[in-house]
Amino acid sequence: MGSSGFLLRPNAMMVHEQGQCTMNKIIAFSTVALGIGLAWPGPAIAQTAKDLVGTWTNVANVNIRQDGTRVNVFGPNGKGLAIFDSNGRFAIVNVNPDTPKFAANNRAQGTPTENKAAMEGGIALFGTYTVGPDKGITMKVEGSTYPNWTGTEQKRTVVSFTGDELKWTLPASIGGTAEVTWKRIK
Amino acid sequence: MNRRSVLTKSVPIVLAAALLPSSVVAQQKSIKDQLVGTWIFVSAQDVKPDGSKVDPWGPNPKGAAMYDANGRFTFMIMRSDLPKFASNNRGQATGEEGKAVAQGMIAFYGTYTVNEGDKTVTTRIEGSSYPNLIGAEQKRVITSLTADELRYTNPTTSTGTKAEAVWRRAK
Image (cartoon, rainbow over all chains, first blue to last red; front, side, top):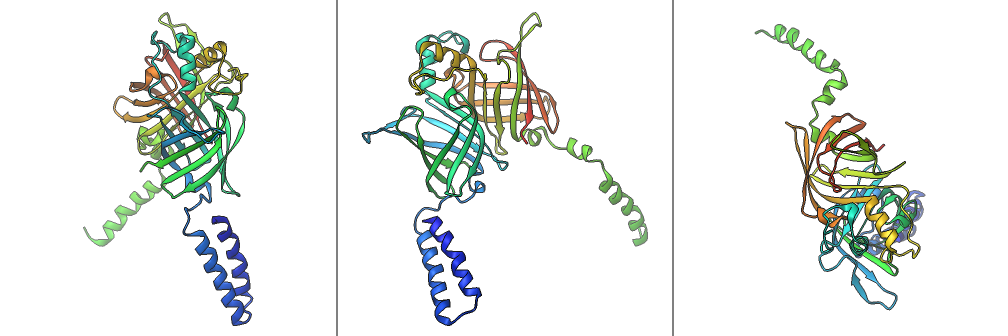
């Protein structure tokens, strides 16, 4: 919707600038109005990387399985933080705060069960990002706590963006689709 | 003081201010202001009680720390030789894969404050890939901070050692 408004506007302006008959102007203005009308009522779509710059707290991280069932990826209290800087760098950390603590109280001495739970209970990644031209976010992952993600280029589809709330989807690291919702921290 | 003397006295001051080298101006920035931004991990060495150093992160480690202007941060470091999961599913690590990754990475986020007096950064960890750190408060002692490089010591790491870390500012 956002992109259709975006595309219609330059065409309309061109007709207007040619200074042709009134009918053309009416058509031009109607087209602009239609474009704006189409673009406005729905949620705004992130147009540029600038729209993302800031710090975001995780609101929801849902795994949508192939049968359509929805599961909270990081449990009922899942949380996380994402930072997008103005130079095109980002970092994301998502965790399940209910993951059991390591009994040895030493990160290098987890039991197999503790290590596995820690892997299931969190993901972090960092790298560079760009937005668009199709309003998706492309992330070049330089490093991730999930090794399979390191060195990959990933596309997140922005499904809604209101300036202060951002929701995207992506192929999940556990299969299915991840639907992740963020709220801007002010 | 008449108008002329105000002029003759103030002009040199204005000129002097304009000619101040930029390094002097930079030094006036608080540690907090210098810390804000994105930093890329260079190295961290564990320092043992006998003074010997061990590099737990291996060659070409990866990592980034981002400090925002409002006191929030993310932090992560990982070895570059972590095994990819054969299942291609984060929830299905083998015992070996899970062990290598749990030992070879750390990530956390939360809030931070800077003590300008003793040059320490205190982080309050809200979420971490290592569950024992959740809710923890950690202190880093800044030993050197320039426009491009950050060095600090961590008196207590998550593997029970002291560490010296080096970061470079992301360009």
